[in-house]
Structures are given as C-alpha cells and as structure tokens.
Length: 482
Image (cartoon, rainbow, N blue to C red; front, side, top):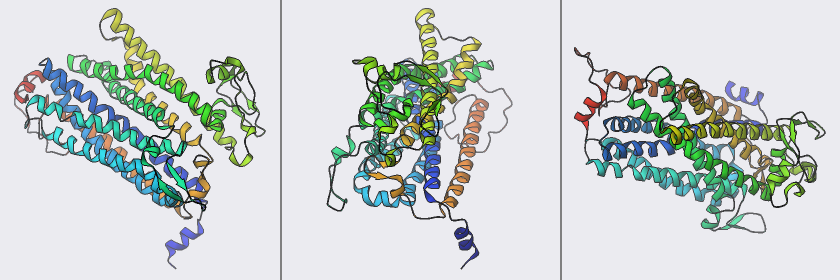
C-alpha cells in the first residue's frame, strides 16, 4: 500500500459537503464568464454596426479590440465549462447513472451551440481584413444567437432539476423513456432561462462599463472611452428594469411550485397569512426568527397581490423533517436573497439615474459621483448574480432533483474527494490570475500601439520603438479599416 493511498485513507471525509463545495466553487467561477461570453458579442456588434453605418473610426477601433477580449474570455469559459461537465460524472455518479438520459438532453443542444459559437468567433476574429465590412458584421450575428441559445440550453438542464419532467419511470424507479421536448421545456425553464439571459446582459454590461468608468475617473474622457462606456452601460441599463420584472414573476413561480424554497427565502417558520417581509434577520435552533426588519404583510402581498395580506404562506415546519433544509441553509438562502434584491435595487436606481440624464440633458452623466457608482456597479452586479445562483441551488436542498432524488443519494462514495477540491481551487486560481494578466496586457498593448494591429496577440513580441509618437486612433483606424 503506497504512502499516498495511506494518507488518503487516513484523511477520509464525508464526501457530501466536499462534493457540494467543489461544485459550488467551480460553478461560481464559471458563471462570471457567462455574462461576458453572452453580452460582449452583442456589444461588439453594436460598435461594429455604428462603425460601418456612421463611418465612426472610434467605434471600429472599439469593436476590433472588444472582439479580442471576447475571444479570450470565450476560451477561458470553454475550459471552466469543460471542467464542470467532468464533475457531473466524478462527483455525482449515481445522479448521472439514473437521470443522465434525461438530464443530458439539454447539454446535447448546448454542445451544438457551443461549436457554432466557436466557429464563428474564429471567423469573426480573423475576418477583420479578409471580409467586406457588412459580410464581416453578419458573421458576428451567429455568435450572439449561439450564446443566447447555448445559455438557454444549460439553464434548461438546471431548470429540469427544479421541475423534473419529460421522462417515464419503471417499477424500479429507472428512467425507461425520455421526451426531449418535455425535458427542455419543463415548467421552470422559460422563467429561469429569461432570468439568466437578462442577468447576462445586465452583469456583462455593468462589468465592461465599470472598466471604462474607472478610466474616465482617471481623466480619459475622450470620445473613444465615452462611446465604450455608453454602449456597455446602455445594455445594462435596459436589462435592469426587465430583470426586476422577470425576477418578480419567478418569485411567484417559486411560491406556487417550490414552497420550501419560498419559505426559506422569506424566513417563514410557521404557516400563516399576513406574513411580513423580513429584511436581514435569521432563524435560530427552534425555528425562531431573530433580528431583521419585518415589514408587516408584505411577503403575503407579494406572493399573490390578488389576495393581498390574506395570502397563506407555508412555513418550514409544515414540511416533513426529512424534506426540510437545515437552519444554516435557510439562513444562507435568506441572506443571499436579501443581497440579490438589495444590490438589484441599487443597480436599478443607477440605471434610472443614467436614463434620466439622457432624457433630460441628452448626454451622459459624467460627474464624479456617478462614475464612482458606475465603477462599483460591475463588481456589485457579479455579487448579485452569484447570490441569485446560491438562492437557486441551496434553496433546492435537500434535493438534487426536486422531490425525486436527494443530494446524499447522488454523491460519489469517494472519501478522498477533498483532494480534487483542493486541486480545482489551485487550478482555477492560476487560471483566474492568468486571465486577468492577459486582459491587462492586451489593454496596455492596445493603448501603446494607439490602434488595432491585426497580428496583435497577448504574447506577441513587443513592437519596435518608434522614432515618432504613435498616431491618433482615428488616423490608424482609417488605414486598417476593412
């Protein structure tokens, strides 16, 4: 027996929390790249359209640079997404063994859209000087569509875990037939997919805009930076109120279809009407609500405005003990819900500020306070999105497939799973640092060059020192304009 095996045996742990922690960690890392992969393609095409339609050299330069950034984030997202697909088999073998025939259907479609996206990303990147302007522009459209439908496919798989449908079980509980349409278009899919797609444009827009807001705070308020900020922030500002409406609708869906999750969200221990909306707060060992700011009757009213405060909300104690989430899980779900709603409200107010500025003054708000808020909006949007995913995943506990299979019945029996968790943390930390360094170096090279150079790559040799100052962006772009 080798020493390594002896060490693993000696440090054998309960695989459930380690498998959950590893899956949560990889998902939370990967999901940061999803909004960039989906929204950056659209923002790049907007800049590309403006460049061609209005003969705007700044917009053309912006589209060219963004296409490079988009390619890097797409490549990193492909790596982190591939790791996730392996983890389904390694961490949850019994789940895949029983439900793989149904759960795998949306991933099959996601694979098709991924290949389409990869092909057209390559065509778009290498087509800048090889295709006519409008031909090149249209090669970017499939990237946007593939990003949308690929995201919907992945979310359909997660939605199926919340509302399993489209399959038939035999007497032994095994899946004997699968209806792909029923699997994909399960009851949770339309709202959950809409919620994630709008979140992608909201988060991606705020993230990109926050970079240019920070640059504008440093004095770079030229047309190029204002245009980049305007495109990205406008996408986010349009998505924000839409997200509030979609989020409100999906909350009512959860009230009707996942009462345990809803009780955790609203911190409701006992079934009753006139349930308050408790801001912050927590439940103690005896399901007693402690702390927080209760707003009388608001949770009941929001659950069903037609019956208002008379709306009855099922409490956590109304469910069988085996089907109840733990107290820690309830407190996590409630806190993350408050974080998501609180940050979402702040982002909505910021988007409203931006919109009023355009309507009243017909120009971008550019005072220091607005730019500081816009700089913070990117990280805050990411936190709100992560909080939303925690509500979705932890709120489903103890089920991995709602009302069908528990997490404890799906997990691997490998007691050395902690080793893969540590390896994944190290790998993702290295990948994250490398990605940030590459993007930062690309940004520096673009600024130093003063314009777009087609063969410019993150690791290309630095250009030779020039005897004359670099040309202004508009001058260089005219030379490179396809």
